[in-house]
Length: 280
Image 1 (cartoon, rainbow, N blue to C red):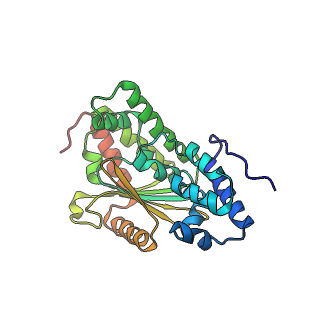
Image 2 (cartoon, helix red, strand yellow; image 1 turned 60 degrees about the vertical axis):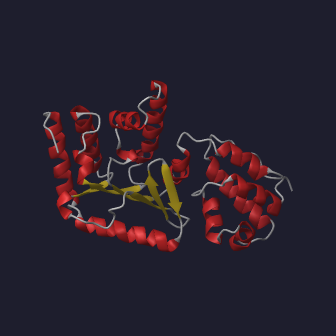
Image 3 (cartoon, one colour; image 1 turned 90 degrees about the horizontal axis):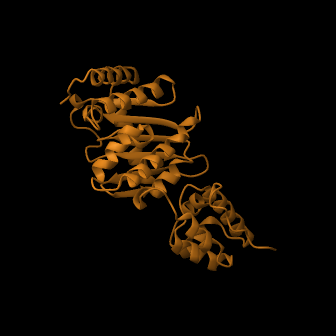
């Protein structure tokens, strides 16, 4: 029987590699749990690799080749798949986001990347890297806007964002940029493409005082949570941890304005920015 073919990294490579992993595992008669044991990972993690919701890292690829007798196939293709336009701490989360059926998040400080305009993203990246060449900023902005293409589908993924009111009042890039950014969010809401709630400052202490997070659901794999900090990020698949983040999102929704009230606030602030009014 011929071995699996090398992947073309330009055509849904991670899903293809997942399918090849499932095929190779089943060919030797191992369950997901049995393959996971020598790797010191759960059968659920193997399932996530096969579903394409998790990236296969090189150390796992080498062991899998040894266990399944795939003659270096996974190691070779893993090296190709490791190339990403995103920072190392976010690359795996971005790849998971692209195949999620639902995304729920809380944004504490800035408009979520999937909802940003070019002007807003440019201001954010320039603040992160004040001395970077313009072409580096251009590439980062292009990668961020490319992520937003997944919202071109009219229904999938469901995106439900809770935005702290501070997100709307922090003038990133100036009044004109903020007006455009908020108008963009409002337009997506009015198209019924996303659900957004604003958590008002007057809500006081809330369930996610320590920062932002993202939850992702998938058709054929368990949900994931992503927690991000300055130049760091952690993708969580532990069921108890994910469940805790799900509860946190529910609590935030309960403390936030309704979607209708939130839209009214977003559009009101966009109008204020268009008129050049200042916000504390």
